[in-house]
Image (cartoon, rainbow, N blue to C red; front, side, top):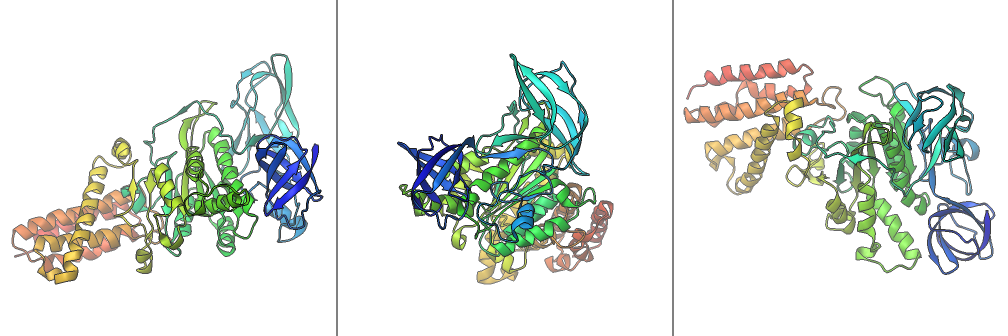
Length: 576
């Protein structure tokens, strides 16, 4: 390692001479060899971002350059792990140093001693390319880990057997150069992993949340933002998405969140059961924890660590859902480091390159054809925590420019105990129109049209509420009063969902379609009854109204569908 010395210290930013480093090289700073990264070079001075507390560092202390970029170790053993922002395993560090991360603490990201049973899928003489699958390892009970070749060439030797991540499992040769193959390899976090082709976002990521799947669908490989003020349910919404979405792998990044909130996640996730398999959800999850009291520089790196791990599993052919909670805290880390670097501040003190950094991160999402020929995806769902719920601030605005789904959490809905507190009038999805064919093939031919009609009724209700506040509902014509009744059904019986109820916590698309069909049928039959002279009060007092209210707690879709026949019979018996 090349040795230099510190010439200046400014918080987490250190200026060093004599290390002859390149941009984004990892360096070791001070006698304790704190981990840092070169983020700027001015003449012969390297500006280093240190990922740990710099208390006690002083000019003259040594600095060592490793000559390598900040990288993650990719191989079996990632799943079920809890890492900090630079892929240090927190359980391993806790075992060595206690509950607080000691300065200079280091631990290998993957267990160096554990042996994995490797089954080779290629043989001697086979020609492989970068990204080809060399073999498989059973990483957890739910996930088979596909060992990906980091090199191109001809297999000279490879054997099945039990290996650690550092053991040589074979040899590859290309143009006379031989290289060892192992179960794991390194990849720089700031470099996106390559793929062959990116597909259009026309496949739904089912979430089990009616308000999202029906009105604001998220595509596999898509991007979504969940902005909202304190207490509006961002974290619970993301945890529900992590648990119930039909992704194969979940990467959850707690980026700069409060310690007690992250503690709750770290305690709850290992206890959660995967609804599809009944096994622990951690069998297909990796958590990255970088709380607000941890070093600010590592918070900036945590986003890149998470997305690189997600891309790695995507390259195996898995669908990955990445939850970033929250990108606002990540942007605050950029702002603090920018201040230390004495950069010209942009709007509200954020660096001028904030928009570019956010776009680079969200651009790494996508449903792709991988180098091995498999189809895989990375879906990014980022929470945004605007101060005071002000969506006009820079992080929210720059996020909205690049994401295609906007799920606006509303504090007033949360205060009324309406969860998920997603405001259906302010939210949108740019994927919905492109999914008409998918909905027709996988749900029903009329599902898309029903969702559009339901949204029209909700928007009409919002217009009528202004009149109601002035003159009361009884002053409205019967047709408008019926709209208010049906819109209330949509709000309370369809959109409102209990994340802690054993039945209502997840809603299959077919169940949602049947529920929506019943509510819209009630509206159309109600219009016909009004034409016959039936009073709107009689319509509101029908027994079927209570049956519609109980639909969400019914498991059997056929019983929900049967309500339609019950409804038609009751309407036919109504008299003017």
